[in-house]
Image (cartoon, rainbow, N blue to C red; front, side, top):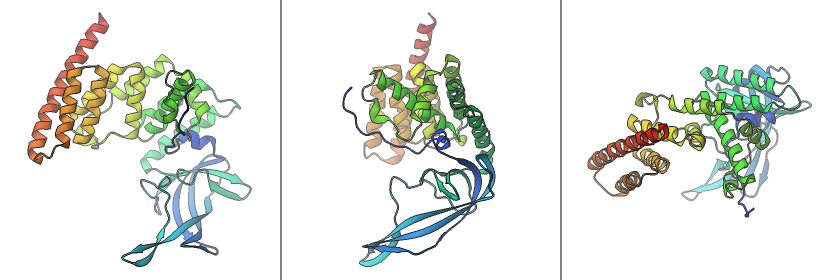
Length: 343
């Protein structure tokens, strides 16, 4: 095989966190405070901290009422207008989209060593969840307990479990990312795609994801397709960007049903719920899936208009016309493709 670049790492999936955990619990973040003696270095200080959580439900492992984690934070000296300023050191690879605050509900993934307890991952070991998501995560974790109660996990059950994760928007990325990584592992090992290794995520449970993909039946693929095409396209329920889970689901479904993936994207374009930048990305994917040069030309024109320094109001009108033409062309092409498939 060709030489490969180092794999990338996304955030850890629920399955990868679960397999590394001795304890999985739902709790509430209580507080984080400094403790012990600080160590001072050249331009930085290492601060010992204690983070405490009140445990509401233990989903895996021994029961407990609270968890206290001892850790270290780095602080370093910076300059602002020539004046020294202390700031908390944050590794860009470990930065959170949303910092966990006191009172937040969290899903905890813990390793234990006697009385010592620590997060399985400094970045992802405590996942913030909404109160409404607790029942979803609880149900999925309990299913994992059943799947992993024997020494060897049932690959068919694992595949079905990952598909169920894709059903809920809160957990969609966890399921689709594992499956997508499994497909990329298979593509690379079979030399179908020698560059697939560049897109490997080193944090996923590679053995489980690869075996789950091998056990992914046509019925399960159809279920994933149905999850995609049954999504709600109403603008009031959508943000102006596709979620990571939706993106991964599209990438999965187009492997076995590119027409369904294209129809989904066209419906999204018609919803009017997305930014011009997001529309351009979806138009590119649709043009690629339907293989129509006219669609590709309209996408390029739309993209050029987005880049040009055109008056905002006029740009919106021009792009709206282009988008309508693109959607009409794509729908016509998809109808022709469906007719050809039936014949």
